[in-house]
Amino acid sequence: MEPLLLQSFYLSPIWGGPRIAEARGIPWSDDDRHGEAFDVSAHPTTMGVVRNGPCAGRTLAEAIAAYRDEILGDVPDDAPLQVTFMDAAQTLSVQVHPDEAYAQATEGDHGKVEAWYIVSAEPDAAIIGGCTTSDVGILRRASADDTVGDLYGRHIPVREGDFVLIQPGTMHALGAGILAVEVSSLGNTTYRVCDWGRGRELHVDKAFDVLRAERRPLVAHFGAPNPQSEGSERLGVDAGFFRSYVVDMANERRSYPCAGRYAVLTCVSGSVEVTTPEGAVQLGRTESCLVPASAGSYTVCGTGRILRSIRTPEEA
Image 1 (tube, rainbow, N blue to C red):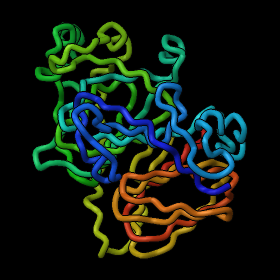
Image 2 (image 1 turned 90 degrees about the vertical axis):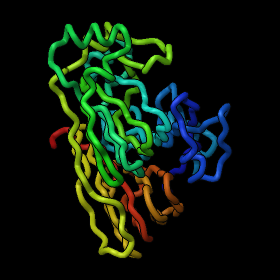
Image 3 (image 1 turned 30 degrees about the horizontal axis):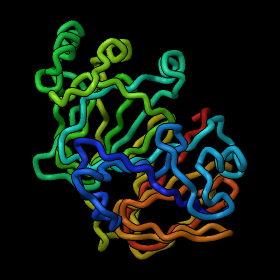
Image 4 (image 1 turned 90 degrees about the horizontal axis):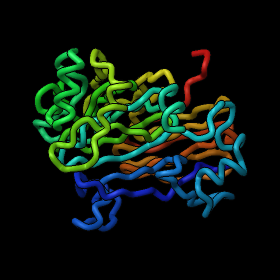
């Protein structure tokens, strides 16, 4: 099976900016912001539609139902990793995600481990990652009146090429001036603890069921892509559930075995071609594809930077 391209599921959040639309040549307006793009997702709330191959026109969930082993391979899951682009013209709500056990028991959803790769960032851009106090009572009171982000959010400066790993239970928010791509596990349950006075619902009780005030994100620095430098592949994040590699391509070709599992490739700079024995697709900046497990192997060629995300074996 060839690499699968998906029709993105777009949202127009209040905080969304125009950079995704600009990169993709699609419309953007105050009424139709396209500020958040779920590019690979089989979640019921953000489902993508397959654009090519034998599954063209089907939702990704329908395609997996028909070709489960061919697409996903030797994994216990019912869906692939998710890839989401976010353009934060304003700071996002301060959030907490549950782990797998809590999400299954309370929401009938999967938990969420996520990693943000910073595609671009304004000079003073920062994220919120963790809390400046471990006093849960103080945090709860500040959450109840929507001030916890200002009073107790831990601000971390970020720049292009940073990769941020956020485990469940970590208080976090993507800051204004950042274009990021999120690679995450299968769930979409989010509990807001601060929305900066926007008036949307907060989820204080459930958030504090799962909040771990001592948790901090891990930040790795890879620097901005340099098309003149020698190509390389480096481990970006190891999330336990999945790993993402930062691959720099300098007019070269790299081949990989599927090893019985799918891969998700995301282009964050330049452009590349992804080829399997049954076909090829082109990826420009901000575009992703899913390489089915049945492909056996795949080759990437071109000049740019990609993220190569794979499901981690349970024994790893």
